[in-house]
Length: 247
Image 1 (cartoon, helix red, strand yellow):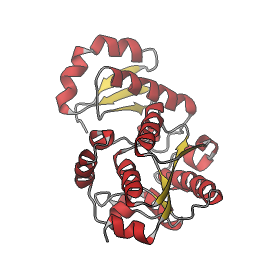
Image 2: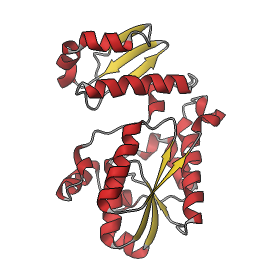
Image 3: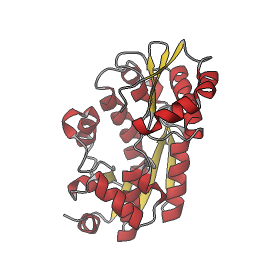
């Protein structure tokens, strides 16, 4: 099945939109196919502001209406307990909200940006999507991440080379309680590092320490900005560590 085949069969669709590479291309392809399309972005404590900014920009550029749904994800005790299957409970909440909102708008088919490169074997969130009957046309059409980036570049989407970004909850070790304070601290730290030019990196929490993970090519940048990083992050953490086993 091609994407065009999918949209011919599903001409009115809602898209769970994150502003990332995959959902951005899906939104573009849906609009280009002629499908009646609406995007839904759930704004909660796990999404930094730049993701919402990117989502607004992309939706405007492809001319698709965007609905922003506020969500108090930290009110879900099963999520904040941060078990190994936290993503399952989070997806249930987030996609449940989107389905409810989209249905009120007359959209009853919900899509997400899961692609053919995503490993479903160890992703609890996939189980929630299956239970909620969320469709993943990029995956169904066999489109890999590399192919999606290639097509996005051809379509001149600014997201084509955007680094992959996992939600802020992934910075907190499994079974350590997730709090707003911890998420704010991580978001502040990562936003600062982005301002210094870092890309595709993480600031993870280890007890009360910050563990910075960067690609090998950016290790020199860490040393270059060492004093600035320490000045910004030391007041927030007991120790600021550099993980030499980079992602």
